Length: 459
Image 1: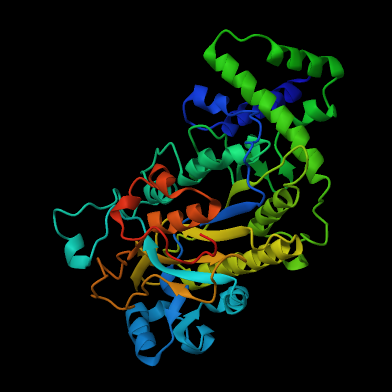
Image 2 (image 1 turned 60 degrees about the horizontal axis):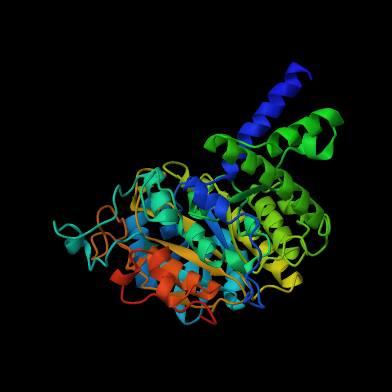
C-alpha cells in the first residue's frame, strides 16, 4: 500500500467516528440492528430541519405592509428598509409582506402549503414584556446573542457543549417503528447536535449519498487481501471498550453504505421526480434537499423500511453585520427556491402530506442598523412547509416593528412571544410523540400554556 493510500485509509477511518453521537456508549450500541416494532404504524412521517446558520434577519423576512406599520418599520430600519413596493403580500386579510426573493414561498403560502410562525425564540418561561426581562427574578436562556450557544439552545435547549438534541430525543422515542433504526436520524449537513441522542445513532450522508469505506467496500483501490484483513480485524474480539465501539462503528458504516447505496440506486439523482432544475444544480442547500428526497423516496425499500425519520440540512452565511441587503437576498433566494423544489419533489413522490420542513436559526437580528448590516437579536420569524401544514396562516403574535416597544429588549431585539419548545412540541405531536413523552423531548414545555400551536393537521 502506498503512503498516500495509507493516509487516505486513516483519514476515512477517523471520519467514521463522527457517525456516533456523544451519548453513553452502551446505550448507543443497544439499538443497533433492532427489528421493527410489532405495532409499527402503517403511515410514514418525517420532519426536515433547515437551519440557517449565522442568524437570519427576521425583520427583513416578514415585513408590515399596512401604511402605518411600514412607516414605523422604515423609520427604525433606515438604510436596511426594503422598498414597500417590492414586498410580496402574503394575503389580503394579513397586512404583511415577504422579502422580494421569497416569491416561491409566497406561492406556497397562497396555496396553503406554508405557514409563518412569528417571533419565536428560546425561552425557559414566558416573559411578559421588556420590563419583565430586565427584572432580576425572571429565568432567561443563558448566553443570549452568542452564536454557538444559541445554535445549541435552538437544537438542544442547552448552550454550546450540549449532548442531546430534541430531534434526537424524538428519534429515540420513535426509532422502534423502523426496520433499520440506523436511518432514523439523518444529517446531510455534517454532525448536528439537533440529532444527537442517547440511543439512536445519527447517520450522516453527503449530497452524493452514503459515506463509508468506499475503496474497501467497492474494491476499487485496495487488493482483496487487504479488504479481507480489515474485515477480519473488525470481526475479531475486542477486549477494550474503545476498540469494541470503534469496530462497531466501522461495521455499521460498511453495512449501512452497502444497504443505502443499493437502495438509492433505485432513485438516481436524475430521476425526473427529484431532479434539480438547472438553476439549482450547484446550490448547496438544494443538493442537500435532493439527497433527503432520495432517502424519503426509498423509505419502503426492503433493506431500509422506514416509518419515522428526522432529517437535518443547513445553509451558512446569515451573520449579516455588513452588506446585509445583498447577502441576505442571495441567501433567501436559495432558501425559497430550494424549499419550493423540495415541496414539489415530495408531491411528485406522493408524500407531500407526510413530510414537513421547518426553518430555524441562531436568533433574529436587531432592528437598528449598524451602518449597512445588523447585530445579534433574539426572536425571529420562521416557516413551516408541507402538505400537512395548515398553511396560508400566521401563527403566534406578530410584534410591533419599531424601537422602544414592549417587546424591544434593546436596539429592536425582539423578546420572543412563542418558545422554541412550543414550536418543537407541535412538530413532535404530529410525528407521533405521546403527550406524556413531550417533557422527555422538551424539558421546559410544562412552563408554557400551550404545547400545540395549531399549525399542523392530525395532531
